[in-house]
Amino acid sequence: MFSAKPAPITNEERQHRLERLRRLMQGQGVTALLLGSTESLRYFTGLVWHQSERLLGAVITSTSLHYIVPGFEKSRVDTLPHLEGEVHIWQEEESPAALVASLIGDKGRVALDDALPLFIYHSLAKALGQDRLLDGGALISSLRSRKSSSEIAIIQYAMDLTLEVQKRAHGIMKPGIRASEVVRFIDEQHRELGGEGGSYFCIVSFGTATSLPHGADGDQTLQEGDVILVDTGTRIDGYHSDITRTCVLDEPDADFARAWAIEREAQQAVFDAAKPGASCGSLDDAARSVLAKHELGPDYALPGLPHRAGHGLGLEIHEAPYIVRGNSLPLSEGMCFSNEPMLVYPDRFGIRLEDHIYMGEDGAKWFTQPAISPTQPFSD
Image 1 (spheres, rainbow, N blue to C red):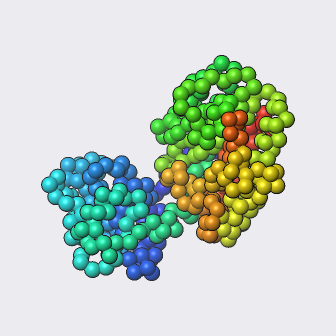
Image 2 (cartoon, rainbow, N blue to C red):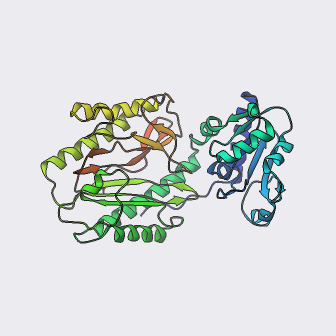
Image 3 (cartoon, rainbow, N blue to C red):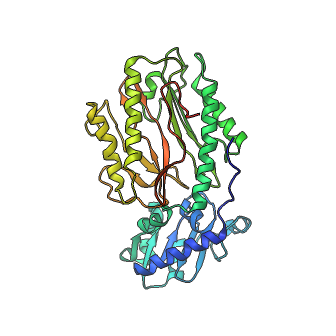
């Protein structure tokens, strides 16, 4: 069906990530970086924790790794996989920001995980001084956005798994089936094939509901001749898959067939524009040029493309790099992103063909092969 499951990310690779981070910190004059309970904490340390009103995170300096942990959670943290580092606890009546300040000292610039909640930022500003705090987002994303071969192998496995689930879901489509039944089936299939927690998300839309990019509220029933849109994914070792197919069960009418072909042309244009060194924004431009040629749009006007042409993917379902107008970030080896220039005809139908790309040493590669036609949503 698909290749053997790849090995998870090793602590050796995480240590290498920390070494690269520290070199960047030194080059930018950053004394310390504070991570919250975010995917970046997982990326650098392997520790998986969900954000709450209590700060649990890590302080990375040029020579050390410190964990900031609520006192009563230490016993659980001790049981979880994570890189070795010194654990510092704070009790309920104490300030975790003060603990962070005591570790960093009263000098130097401190970069903050850009996914930290605002209330944590305010407490740190009081404890450290606002002028010492920097946005660490660019520092972090410069590393996370360029995937290693190990990360790409995991994402490829997750994509292969979800593609198989998409095929199975297509096999149960028939007039009278409810969207909720398909959602449940997809979750079951993700679980059966080893996806972590089943489906991470799932959108199943029929008919005019396909013109709403993220689906409609309530349940729907598939009617004869309806357009079908299925967008779903799962996680493997924390890394996401995300694939969308739009199809019809019987031969489409001329309007839908033409629109589907335009969508596929726009998707191919994005792939063809994905050259090493090309700006992320130029890929979005390529998709819109196709639509303009067919007198759709312009810009975000409908019928046309109402959103960016794609998003990065990894430990988060949406992360850098973003394939959006004006993004001057150049594509480089290891970047992974979606290719989904959705075409929307309001109150009629929407067509999203979503496959993902990774930038190899010699250019763009598909994680999954694009759909063939409105009635052939898979390449084999």
